[in-house]
Amino acid sequence: MIRRTGALFAAALLLVALMPSAALAARPEVVFEETFSAENELAFGMSQECGFDVYITETVDVKETHFFDKNGQLRKIRVHVMGDTLWSGPAGEAFEHWVVNVSIDPIAGTETVAGNRWNAHGGGGGILINGSGRVVIEFESGEMTVRGPSDDLDGNFTAFCAALAP
Image 1 (cartoon, rainbow, N blue to C red):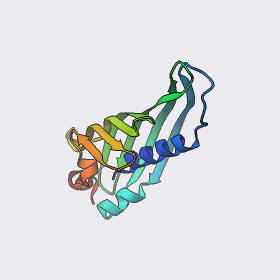
Image 2: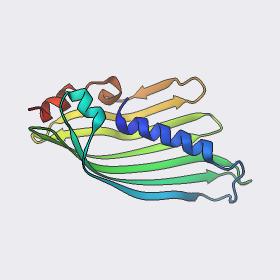
Image 3: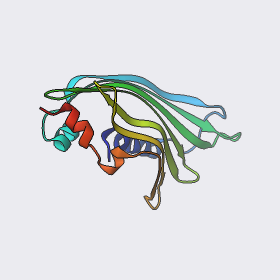
């Protein structure tokens, strides 16, 4: 599973587990909003995939909103994540701008990830890896339904690694 999607799934599940049982308001509430940055950090997972050091420079904006019914019960969590990423290897770079919306339905027991999970472009303008569309995960069974290109989930990193390779 890709680094970002896996991290989003884990973070979203942790947020559900840590939420109070009763909501205080019936209208949506922004519970988290933050910008994160990384400057030329080793991307350990991609370094292992590619077989050489891959570095990442990235800025990510995250906003989490909780939605309640008229009785104040939590009905949905939405996490909006947007980032700009520069991947660099020994001989090349890849760029991406990505936007993902994670929607957690605690009643149905599902998490939906929709958007452009990973869509890196090389210096020549071509797509090196594409992970976009919609992924739905059932909490109880762990079943995942994927709609759309999923190089990232399929482990298809060949073109991405080749573009950065020495």
